[in-house]
Structure formats: C-alpha cells, structure tokens
Amino acid sequence: MTLKSATMKFTGIRYSVANKRGARTSWSSSGSCGCGRSSGGCRSGGEDPAVEGIQEAGKELSCIFNTLQNKWVAEELAKAIRWRESRVIQEILKHCGCDCKVVGFFCTGESDCVRICCEFGKWNEVKVTFDICIKRKKSSCGRY
Image 1 (cartoon, rainbow, N blue to C red):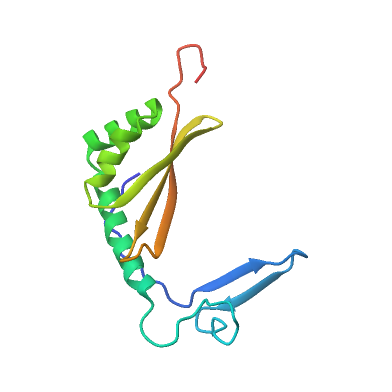
Image 2 (image 1 turned 180 degrees about the vertical axis):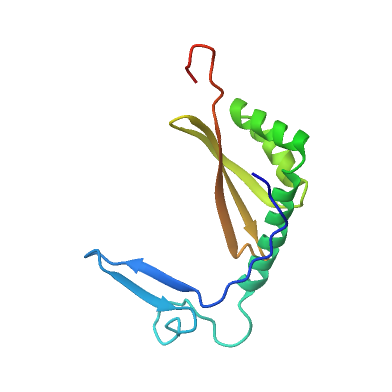
C-alpha cells in the first residue's frame, strides 16, 4: 500500500443515524443543526472553533502517514506494535508535533493492534481515534 499526500474535499455530506426501531433517519449537512433546541450543539454567531481543529488534524495526520512511507519508520512502528512499546510509538507520532497518545494495545484474530487518540484545536475541540493493525508473522509450523 502506498500513501500519497492527501487532499480531501467534502461536498454534499449526508449523515445517517439509526433510531431505536432500526429505521434510519437522514439529514444533509446544508440543513439546520437544531439551534432552536436546547441541545447546545450550535453557537450563535462567530466561526466554530472545531473548523480550525479539523484543519489542524488534516495537516498533522497527513504528516504522520507521510512519515510512515519511510521504511525505517515503518519497521520501527511494526516492531513497536508487536512488542507493545508505547514509548516508541509516541516518539514516531511526536515527530509531526501531534498531541497523540497510545490508548492501548489489543489483538484481533491474526493481528496485533494499537489504538491511538489525537486531539486538535486550540482547546482540543477535535478528537481523532484510530487503530493500526498488523498481521502476525507466521511461524514455521503455521501458527501466529
């Protein structure tokens, strides 16, 4: 898999939510977010500070994934995930100036995984959590 510098463009985003009966309710991003309700989800006036946080997330996450194109860095990350060395993973993430933390390690079937959480924005308005999973090496007897 090759990673290239990513430029994302989002237009006409649609959201879908399942309600308790299993039916889906959809709404478009161009609609109101319910400012008349007491949910507190919208701000009156001014720009939403999460926008800047999302832009920061895009920039810093692109930096992280571009760094992983370096073979040495990729080898170090794979080794750190296999050996559950959070300190090494934190050092790789810190290279781009991200506020990212290793949440934990886990296994799924044939893979070893790490869950990473990053926060962005002036007041950490945006939180991105992602997993990186790698298949275990097979031993000579066919086991992992």
